[in-house]
Length: 281
Image (cartoon, rainbow, N blue to C red; front, side, top):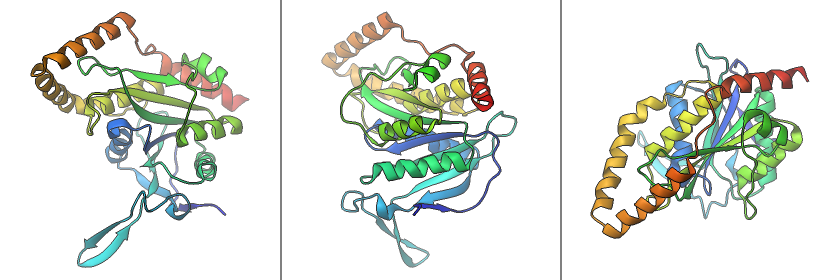
């Protein structure tokens, strides 16, 4: 029995399915904030949600009680799916900003695969954020990867090298790869010494890279001022701690020497060619 509860049908043009989930791979809430902004920016329409009963331990992710117009109601953890029409773009978006489930990950991944197939999504893109050795004084790097060697080679992405405990995203990538659905991951590195949300610089970096990869406008420029304010606040705090200031300088040197840069501006064009070949196959 499907755990999906469809709400309305939205006619979408060759959509990308963009997913971000609170949990292990959403440091500072940067990834879910990115998808939330896309939902708001495009005034997205609700497509479906996933029944939480099967997937959550409510002692860990407790529902909330609130009073709405004098009436008491319980708000359960939700994973809602939105459809966004993107005028003047080659692709629309299917969007999910939710909570990583505790239970039955394979069943949950099956539900996301059903969404991808039902909406005819041409590619699934997961957004994530990890605490790392990134200095706040430099643009926060975004790493793109794909487990499928053909996808990775064609789009100039890396191959995953991590071995160890994984989350729902890892299980989802495995499910989609086996089903033949193109899927890539974009992950931003968040300074480990500034782990708390919000981190609008990390959110901006994810949205900027998503736009570079897909060619779909993400309105990341709207976060420029807020991201700069965030950096100034951290600058002030670091300047008052000589030991921390020295540590940040070491991180800066490491980043400057590695000079990790995103792929070129022609990535979106290469993505279109890749998707065209997939459709012909």
